Length: 293
Length: 298
Figure 1 (tube, each protein chain N blue to C red):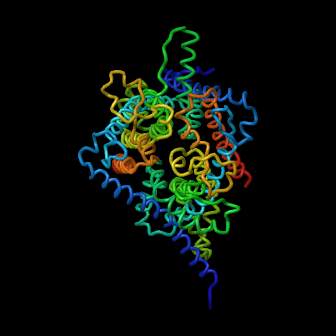
Figure 2 (cartoon, helix red, strand yellow; figure 1 turned 45 degrees about the vertical axis):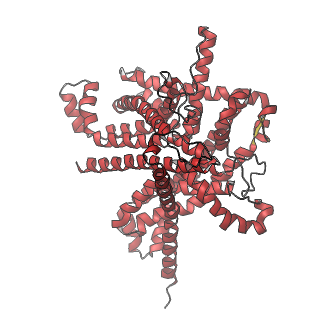
Figure 3 (cartoon, rainbow over the protein chains, first blue to last red; figure 1 turned 180 degrees about the horizontal axis):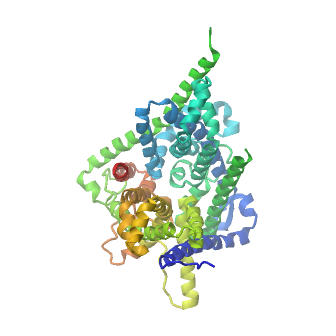
């Protein structure tokens, strides 16, 4: 039987593994008190009243999922187009310029996206999208208010932020298609669009993988969303023109006074555990979609 | 004859090209506004912007971001000093003992960490220190509290953010070393540690330095893991001998807090901070890419 530690360096590896696992376990331990205290109501009610020690995070979980879904839906169209454009349509000489621009978009710190979203994107979306649309959709989407911070704004900002990541992964997939397959497709008389469409279908797994990473980022992103989502407890989280909360922005907004209340720290920990579970579920659904085909 | 297929092809290719250019519009606008607003804010209080503390709201004076620059520098340096050696050591282990159960466990745990939103890493650090405090109080019966909001916990959180990225990158660089080089090194009779430090790390230095620089630029721009750990402070704390155990500010926390404030002076300060941060992150990123290109040409 092989020994567990083959070399003194293994001790450091073991140390890192134990510290990280201990931290994950502590995260779970810290979220137990609120679950014992509130039970299932923690997930199924929309109330956040630390003074009465009432915590229910349905509004924030809903907000996170809505932001994740809208931004991935928008990001899917844009990132697939961008990846196809770079890999297939743009002149080869310009390709590295687009790749660099794309990667720089991914390297910008998220808090800078948040500042830009708060000062420029939110008022722009209010003036040109939300206010005009709300004249006849206000019963479904809610009536937007002046600064323009809303769940919708957060979704658009996240779509902008996930495109560089998703499209980089999809691009990798497209560039990894062997040349002889592309030549074979062209040789049977396919038009350019048919060539692109066949290749898109070939890299389906990369597309699902890239979009799942985007969903994970949209659900987990904290400060950028916290700056544009409005931070209002909004039980009707599906009315996307109203300000709301996501789980991460709830944590970012509430951490400063968390220790003043008995259960609030625990409630924030449990909330973070549930967004991790949402991300994990999305990954599992995505992987099963990949396997079925 | 009208060829429907070629018309459809042309229309679709044009649509894709237009859609592909859309994401660049907001990013270009973001760069333009950060540079314009940032330079404007800095020019209002020229050298002072880099060392002064934030101004009093309503005074009409734009203060400075001195404490935040110092905070970011301290947090990132400590995290790098812990994170880089640690990830090099475990990456060497993982590249030498591919079949080891420990390597498999490390791969699973560390790549799981990669998927965690960074806010959870901040919470995990907070939880670690809380539970340690409870343990000290209950089992050691001494009245010592590890500070939850401090430079140290902020640096630990940033270390954990950079660890998975560095581990994966350095492990891949070491594993891609040609087998002939490995055999040559071991045929000299070098020990595993000597072979790695004298030969393999040097051989793969280009890609390893690139990953380290990219990791530093990543943690420099992190805000979420610092919320529950470094907590933020608007003043110079470095003159205090115990500053490692006290909260500290950073450029990212400052952009978040000042940007959300209702005061014009503070929002202008946030733009200045954003400009400095963007300049720092992107210059690291560009140096990293330059080194990477050199490494491939070598």
